[in-house]
Image (cartoon, rainbow over all chains, first blue to last red; front, top):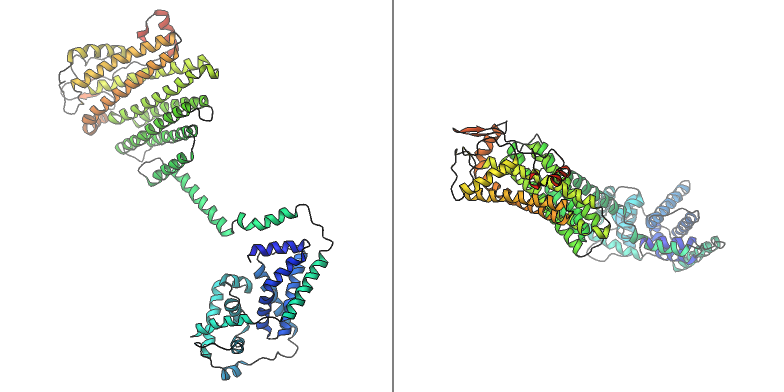
Length: 174
Length: 427
């Protein structure tokens, strides 16, 4: 589905065709969920934040504002919601996650063989937030460097550097 | 190794939200949208807007494409403007401008528009010639060489304009042919005036001057054709007879001037003999002298009095003598026809004069090319008083070739009164 189709669907939705927004959700629902999931490490929270993301998008459209690049816009809203989520949890207990030391000790993978999904998830979680979100967008969501740079508000060159560092980081586990 | 690992990350794409959540969230959002837009009324132009958004991507270019396109247009325009300003044919930008001109011709699809394009090119070429003549950066030799190049181009353009006008007239192409012919007439008039200025400003001599005069004669021929077209259209287009007659009168006057110039060169280039070295006061006398000499000298090789002096062979001299007699005859006939109101005949005779001038120019050009350019031109350049120095023989004073101080109309009136059509050329 092209960018222009999304604009058309958003226009139709704002003009009393709710199913058009449903189609947008069909396309981006899982993507946004995944993006949030790899940041918050919790399915329920991810689903909740993904719902909020689409709700925010709708409110934005309802206010009569125009969205130029829907994909970047949607990921940005999701990203901000994750940030808000962690801010609100600052005073609460830390999420239950694997610590880097634990993983470093326990994981060793052979890249020539198929790696278990759970192991891959664990490896991904070893990366710092910034690196992880970029690796998710680049290698899981298959977005271009340019598209990623718009989402994370960094230059394409900076995005490339982060990807390079992430790959170097992951090399430790092979 | 790590690349293989990172590629395996793609497998994490299988991480998906639960189907239950997807259904619930979708349903919730669709209901929310429905609820929020329930009272929304579809405007009359809704379908148009939908269509426009659907086609927006195809209709509106991306900013990068638009900027690139604008930059390209800007670059081409800037180059075009710079090339347009270039007047030196040896410069690269001049060839760029010639390419632009060729492109303009390709875009001109009808004979009418082609004629207009050629006329536009003629205007530019004439300006180039004028700028070259005024240029102080170039030395005389270089300047004359470039003027020659430009003038050759001008002749081609003028000829092409004439051919296009002819096709436009024959095929009854779109546009007003009469207006086009008037445009050609006016343009050729300006071109002739401009080329005369070029000769004056560049102080041309010898073969170079002959080349420009050839261009003038060619331009006159084109103007003759345009005026003939106007005469043919006179009844159809209610053209003023007086206006047309004035055009023919002007042509006769200019033909007379051209004739004087030819005679001037003739005197410079022909062999100097004691009989012809006397000061000739009027063009009429020159013609008479030439006619007499034609009979006397035909078939003989004229002796050169100096190695530096241009020499006409007796054959060429005889031809030129015959041409000069024909000039006079045709000018007489033209003024007769004009007096009778037969514009076509008058124009035909003037056109004959133009053709004769072209022939005479060719003969003089060949002679001057052979003799004058290297040394003869230098000798002329050294001589500021326009007189011809002949080593060891004598010095001829500047020839007082006749100039038409009276208007041609006045001359014609006088002729009609006196019944003497042969005195067109007055002192």
